[in-house]
Structures are given as structure tokens and as C-alpha cells.
Length: 452
Image (cartoon, rainbow, N blue to C red; front, side):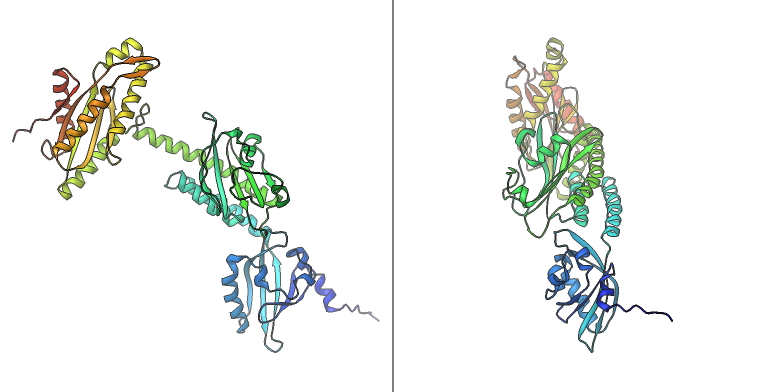
């Protein structure tokens, strides 16, 4: 004769790894199996009387309520997913199967913890997203915003900033900073004593819980965060910065798993930043003069062509000023190329201060510069700027303890009077500049009207 083992239903349910629960129409827990403590962190008696929406991730509550309404209308739901906040503050991903029992007026649900699976999927998605952002159009700011979006899919990241360290200047900067209480931070030395600086100096991740942060002071935060997590950005053998998460909410906490996850992401981010920096630098070198950081000949001509097209469409005027520095070759031969380079950089800086933000100053080669004055009213506007440049560039140059004298010779060509194309305007301004130089220099000459 075979004996049968009879176990109460609640004992059988408590043996399951999944959580079995019964809730009323408002979502209050009426019965919960023992697995709740493993999955949600709460014992069954701590969940009874609470609603599921209290524990649900805030971003999932609206869709969660809509789903519950459909289930309560008699539509069974299998394998729907949402997020809950664990008792210790971290996010758990739950897969539910649920059905409404009309006679009993309750909803029965089975919850399976799929956090590890979702984390693995999210990490793969993060790798792809960061790689895609690295190779997509856009500058570093675009990359930083995308990195923030990626991290938000993995961790609570309402308050997030990225710090970069420039070893040459010993400066810690914050090119991306999102915080609900703090404004973007100014640059500061690495010895500033903040948690962030500590992460970069040590090249090790730091995790501070509420109890630890309350006992410390981080000068980065205007309001003291309760939880703080920072990981270094390491590219090759260099620590180039840090990723930082801050939480001011008592319901959000970071743990060792979160630290490992952010470290995994940080290695991809560091490589992405370095690749983006290299690409940006190559783009810069292709369009800008390396010595003065002014637009080079190609970029200057490109902007001139664009300006001409706008002028032709709108019956506008523009001017090109062409100049070189009198006595530059003598200065270069007498005091050396280093002094000559310093002089050219100073000339570039003075030129920038003589024009509007919308104008373009370019270095065309050697000591030859050009200025594009966009959207002027008359030829007189161009000569006023030429006078300003003449005065600014004729002042003595104090370089490396030496006082040097040099002044510009300028040629001015105005559209449409002196040419209809970029090459005509450049040529006529260049010819006028040589007339100024042959006339003794330190002056400007307006181009002659071309023969009809």
C-alpha cells in the first residue's frame, strides 16, 4: 500500500523560487509566498496591506496601472515585465503572469526575478549603444548625452556627471553635469579633495552609502548626496577621468553589483572618449592652422563661398581683408622661429578681438592672414575694421622679454564692387595688400574697381 504525503498548500507555495501572491482590486497584497523576501527583500508580513504600486519603479507605474485595469477586466496577462524597487534600494526586474478571479474578486500573480538576465541583456545593449555613439556623427557632448542615456537603462542615474582630467594643466573639468540640486562645476585642480578627485588619483572605484557620506564632506555637491558612486575612466595606462552617480533619495541606493556594472561601462566609455577626441583632433587639423588655431585656407575659402551664396540670394554685401606683417622675415631671421611663432599667435589673438563673432579670421600661410566680414552695409564698414586692425597690430609686441615692432599691410576687397567670386575677391584683396606694402607698409588700400 502506497502512503501519500499531504502538505498544506501554503507550505508548497513557500518552496517555490517564484513569488505567488494574491491582491485585491486596488492592488493591495492579501497573501504572499515566502519567496518575496528573496525577490523583493520584504517578508510576506511586511507586504500584506501594501500596494504593488508603492513598490513599483516610478517610471513603470502608469503602464502598470493600465495593464492591471486590463487584467481586472478579465484579460489574462502572461510574461509581462516591469521593475520594482528592492527593500535595499536597488532595482529588480520582474516577469509576471497574472489573472483576475471574478468570483473571488482578487488577482492572482506569479512573479519571477529576471534581474540577472535583464542585466546581461542591458550590458550587451550598452556595449552596442556606446560603440554606435562613438562612430556616429556628433561631437563629444553628443557622446556624453548618449552615455548618460545608456547608464540610465542600467542604474538609477538622475544625478550623473562626467569628469575629465588634463594632466598637462592639472585641471579637473566637468564637460557633462546633470544634477537636480547643483549647477555645472568650474574647473578645479586634482588636489581639490573631492570624492571624484580621489577616484582619479587612485584609479579605483569608490562607493559611499548614506551612513558614510553623512560623515564626509564632498565639495563637489551643493547638497550632500546620500549615496555616491564613482568609477575611473581608464584608457590604456592613463586615468582620464571619472563617471559619477549621486542619489539624494533615501529609496535609491548603490551596491557592489552597481559598482561592478558601472566599471564595466566605464571601460567602454573611456575608449569611446579617446576615439572621439582623436577623430575631433584630426578634423580640427584638417580645417584649422595648428599654430594659431585659426581656420586654414581651405576652411576660410569654404566660409567665404557660403557667405557669398547668402549675399547673392539676399542682395547683401561682404568684404575680404588680406594682410601680412611687415618686417616679419627680419624678426624670424634675427630672433628665431620660436619668437616668430609667438608673434604669429599674438597677431591671431589681436585679429580675433578686432572682428565680430560672425566674422572669420584665417591664416593662409606664413605671415599672411585674411578676414571675412560677413553682411556689411557699405565699403566704409570694411575700412573701419581695417583701421582698427591697423592700430591693434601696430602696437609693440612684448615676447619672451623682447619688444618687437611689426605692423600690417592690408588690402580690402568688397562684394559686389570688387568681384563676384571667392577667387576674384581674394586676388583683388591680395593685389591691394601688395600695393600697400610697396607704398611703405603699415597702411591699408582698397582694391580698384575691375575693368568692365
